[in-house]
Structures are given as structure tokens and as C-alpha cells.
Length: 248
Ligand code: PXP
Image 1 (tube, rainbow, N blue to C red):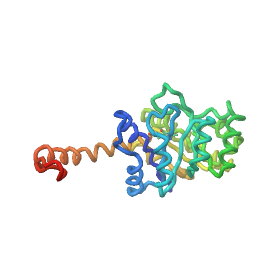
Image 2 (cartoon, rainbow, N blue to C red):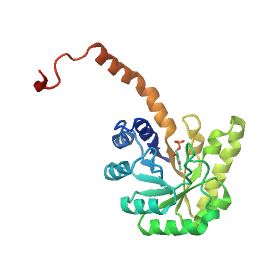
Image 3 (cartoon, rainbow, N blue to C red):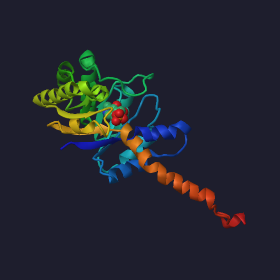
Image 4 (spheres, protein in one colour):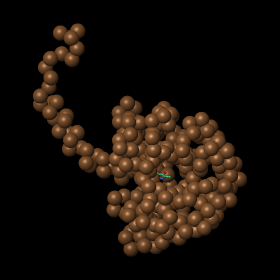
């Protein structure tokens, strides 16, 4: 049975839209855990567009499940990971202009550099996962780089029109079998939704799915009614007495 890693980047996105303090992803991670999250995932981007360094430090202290830190393969990020010591690092490609992670890492094209980073991180006691397309060349390279885990990019499956989905699902299934034959453990994620998740969760040997956007979108859908109703009652029945005795 696959477990669920909840990616909370989009909560931080809403906060950063105003550069304010709410919503704070740190207590939201606790709520995600109360809802049954098996792990919390955050992506600390080079441009700090959503998750901030302070979030990662506080999450390390408060997350009681597992903290998975997604990050680019840079010296700066490796330094942060070795200091914070998340339960797992997932290395992802990163481009400043992208709206979200596009495509998997080209592990075979930068094998020596990635191998050295995997060694540094795993030498520091942090298991490393590499985010790659479900492609044998890349999966073989992940093994050669010394990673213990891979995260299969499910974006192409998620975006496939419905009659192309079986082919993309078969690619994910074959990639899972192939990875496991190399001794790699397998996670997956990106673009999964309430509509398309089940087929991926049912793949034999799939260990964890990392899911973010659709959960945050659903939280708005199921929470907005209550939030509006609370605000409406304040607007219609405002407290008339001063908040503090000194104001009277
Ligand atoms: N896994 C990786 C490596 C990602 O980069 C992301 C997006 O940050 C996710 C999973 C979650 O994707 P989504 O937000 O589409 O569920």
C-alpha cells in the first residue's frame, strides 16, 4: 500500500502573494499529519518563491511524520540539507522561469556531479531520491549515481488525454518494476489529482506518492464556505466593547 507525502508549497505560495504571515505552512503541516499524511514535502527553491528557510527549520522541529526536502542539486542546497537533516532529500531540476518543476532530472547527463552530491548527502545520513522521468536510461543512471530512491515523474501521465493514459500508466508500472530490479525504492508524484491518483497508487511496489496542488485546491473548496460564514458573522455582529481595557 502506498503512503502519502503532502506537499505544502502552495500554502506558502498564498502567504508569499502578500509577503505576510498567513497562511503559515508550519501549523498546516500539523493539520496534514492529523489528516493522515505519512510525510510532509517542501521544495526550498533557489529564488525562495514559496517555502522560506525559516519554514524548513521550523518544520524540522515540528514534523512528526517524515520531512522530505525537495531541492536543486546545488552546493548551497546541499549545505542547507546537511545542516537541517531532513528525513529524505529529493533532488529535482530547477529553472527560475518555470511555474513548477518541468520534467525529471537528466541524471545520465550529469552523472559525476550528481554522484558526488548523493555521496555528500548520504554520507551525512540523509537518504536521497532522484526525481526522474519513467525512462530506463535515467533509472539506470540513478542507480549508478548511488541513490537509494527514485521519484517517478507522473506529469506526463497526469496530462495525457484519457485514451493515452493507459500507455503512460504502463510506462510508470514498467519503470517501477525496472527500478526495483536495480534495488531502487520507488516514489512518484507531480500533477496527481483526486481523479487520476488511484491507478498510480495501485502500482505494485509503489511506496509513496507526493501530492500538493490538488490537495490545497480541495482544501479551499471544502473550507471556503465555513471561512466566509465566520467572516460574515463578524461583519454582521461586530463586537462593540473595546478589545483592551486601556482603550476605554
Ligand atoms: N514531486 C515533485 C518532485 C515535485 O516537484 C512536485 C511539485 O512541487 C510534486 C511532487 C507535487 O506535485 P503537485 O503539486 O502537482 O501535486
